[in-house]
Image (cartoon, rainbow, N blue to C red; front, side):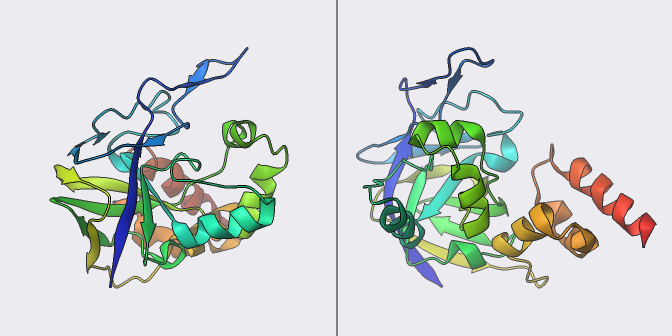
Length: 217
């Protein structure tokens, strides 16, 4: 299975101000950049990750969002949603990110990535778009995009092929995991196989939730 990178986006110095909040800025406002972009272990060159408690770090180094899903939202909200408007680093085409398997690996440019998790919508996202009920609507729709770990540093650019080079046997997709965590918590033990692929900061959190549900069974 393969797709293509439509755009590579970084926040640079264009940080979204968040009056009255701490931290008081966000790197969600990303813009496409031209040429090759270096991919480091913790993300793309020039991309700023302000609050690594919730975004960024080794297991959320890069965020990808699919053009098909962006098109759905553009029609739903009757507005243009060019690359970067989801806070994504990679706008892709030809890849079904809703059905990407947690732990599958991608080759894009000279870098290799691993799908680690879904994106949980937050209030900053709603403020960025000016849509007060966006968190609820985004969660209900379920097209969250995918967080990626960098397995091999390199570089990536618009037009690069994205090839799925391996996929775990457990078959748990980004959307399935997201829906279980958000609304079907009795099924949490089913997510045990994805624990090794999650960001290091997220593994103990989900493991504890799984343990509590299993103990009540």
